[in-house]
Length: 172
Image 1 (cartoon, rainbow, N blue to C red):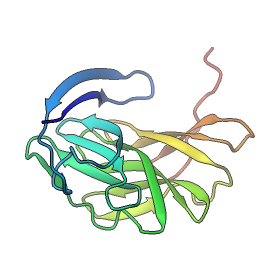
Image 2: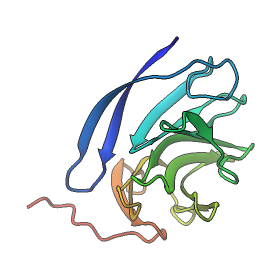
Image 3: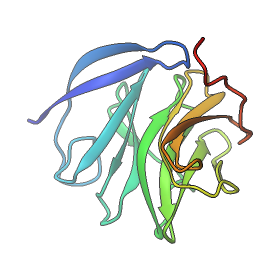
C-alpha cells in the first residue's frame, strides 16, 4: 500500500492562510479509480473532503478531483481538454470551484471550473501575459495568480467573474 503525505490548505484568504497537515492512507490502483496510481500525480491541494491535483494518467496532463470521504475520483465533465495542459489546481472550501493554469496552443491562461454548472471559463483571456500558480479563496469569490504583464512576475487578483480587483500594492 502506498502512503501519501499531504499539506492541505484548509482556509485560503488574501490576508492569512491556515494550513493543516494530514496523513492519509489511501488504496493503490493501477487504473484510474483512486488517487494513488503509477502516474505522476502533482500539486495536490486539499479543501475539506476534496483533494484536487494534476496528473498525466491519460498521457496528457489533466485535473482530477478525489473525494476523501467517498474514497473515489469525481467526474469533472467539460473541465479537461485534449489540446491543453492543465496544472497547479486550487479548490474552494466547499469543492464547488476549481481554478487552475492551462496552456493551450502555446498560450497560458487561468481557468475557473464551476462543478455545479459544469462550466469552464478562461479568466485571463484578455490579458496579454504569461500567467501561473493560481489560488482561490475559501468561498470561491477571489482568485490570485502570478502574471508577467509588467515584465516581471507580479500577483494579480481577480473576482470569480474575471474582473481585476484593485488591490493596493504598497503595504504601508
